[in-house]
Length: 384
Image (tube, rainbow, N blue to C red; front, side, top):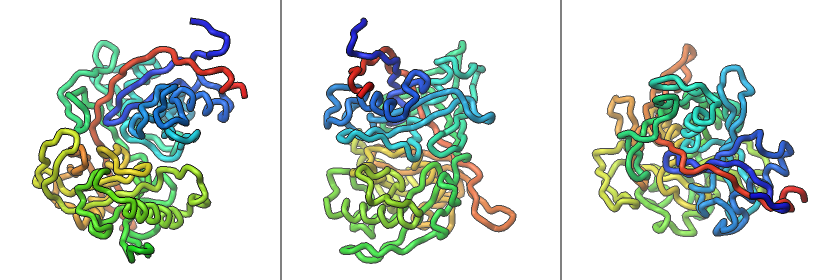
């Protein structure tokens, strides 16, 4: 199909973990960043609450972008830039990482011929340009292609798939401010109308502040429909104060505030209902409950990136999460989230100077290509 006023771009839609994203080759897009972002917004159909004129799914978990390109570091196989595309605003967040979309980069890179397939498992080293760090993916392959079918179950995703193992130990201290970027395992914050609260800010993949659910007047098993504007308001103030602690200048002045720093509330293990399936999640099957505040609401499941920082916090004595977590002695941390349970392998220790370090943080996801083809963008949106 040819038309004078529509410009074609090759694209792929992939389901990665509990998210869905549009994957684009960086070299296929305009090199000027402003023009590039106009193309991306048009591909998604933003700004529009339904994203009706594009491919976006009109909700945060399906309005995600992956830009893939040749590696710019010798210790990586590909470069990857993650973007959280706003739905109602013409804005793309390039801060931090999405752990779910990140899990599909290896599958895409192998399928596209960017990385040579090696059976039975191909290790793909991914350079996150968002944080300038490298993480690794172990992708099962057969006959030169990644496997999609398998018996690994990810809560929040229908059916099962082939397990991709994501190793994020290389993403500790993404802000270059250490594992505890405020310098403390706990910080006290004075929140107008709420009082003093305690948060633990930990940085693995993304910085995240953790608070006890009870300090927000919550039980810990809430989903979006259970929340109130008042509580959301408190959470916005907490994020703002944490941003200041982290030295993020002008964060409050942004029209579209970055998802980072993330905020999660945690509670001791208890029975609750999986809001996606209606099934009961037994308290004995989780180590604690956690909910993530994400782009103005409670995440429907649990971000892969925040599963890493949550599991790390659960292994670090002195943090809010550690104090609430059932310490089994196992390396597996079982996080009870709105859509089920996510297991993360985490190990903490100390270095020669006695400082806390994270030695391991890995989790499993499934990923598969849903479609690929050509998306058309109005020429006037690119050339203006």
